[in-house]
Amino acid sequence: MGTVRASTDDIAGERRQLINVAYRLLGSVTEAEDAVQDAYTRWCGLPRSRQEEIRSPGAWLTTVTSRICLDLLGSARVRRERYVGAWLPEPLPDRTEWDHAGGADPTSPADPADQIVRDESVAMAFLVVLESMTPAERVAFVLHDVFRYPFAEIADVLGRTPAACKQLAASARRRVSVGRTPVTATGRADVVRHVKEAWENKDIAALVGLLNPAAVMTADGGGMVGTVLHPVEGGARIAQYMVAIADKAPGLELLERSVNGAPGLVARRDGVVVTVASFDVSDGCVTRIWAVRNPEKLRPWTREG
Image (cartoon, rainbow, N blue to C red; front, side):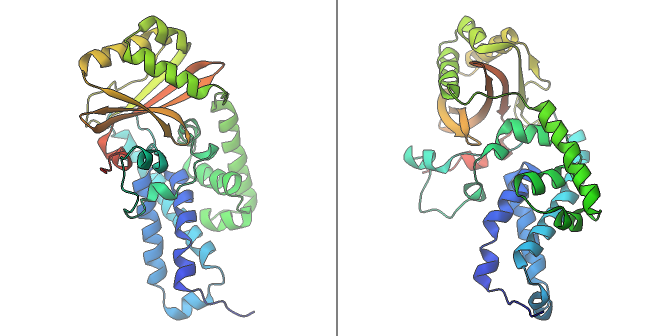
């Protein structure tokens, strides 16, 4: 069998795919970029003779990136035990909306977040369910069910047999089927818009009508900004909390924005994004709210035009 020499452009062209894999594995744009950069550093550190032996540099980079992510997921569990309050994935902006609104410079270098494809697999509800998986389950499930990698290749990442990897993916799939809330795409934007209007008007009754009685709101401040440390449960309690926030933050500007590819809300104060909220909607009512307030997770939202 002959060898195939990969060009620098071919290697660089894998970055978008790798960022997409790593973000779904880690739930963090920053960590995804670091993992991909680490993989490229390892590739560049290989002797030329070794590089030329690798028939598919893209597959090699995916394997190495996935292994790095697997290690990070293991250590992340320890770190998150020390995390202040709830930990949520980093929300993704839709760059085109911010360009249109004058909030970003279209000539600026591409941000890693801009390379991530917005689809069902980056929806906040989906990413939160991924957090409930073991690191091995998450890697097997994401690589196979989302990116369609064969179990033989996943086995090389996890150091297990293809059959064991298949079992891991099946276990993860059961978590997804149990943990996900049915979502109604039609009317989702209208519901979020009505939530925005009711919030701006501090209309508790309207908010209660838009929230499922069993709705749950989870906030992530990372100990860096004030927020509830535990989920707020029940539509009435969430509505009261939202109005209390509005009372304490005069001048808060609410914007309808795409968050992880779905209608969401962005709260801005004095021109600075302070909260990004994602919503799960079912049967015309909000069932879940995820509010990210940790400034470190809002960096992709804070570009200045």
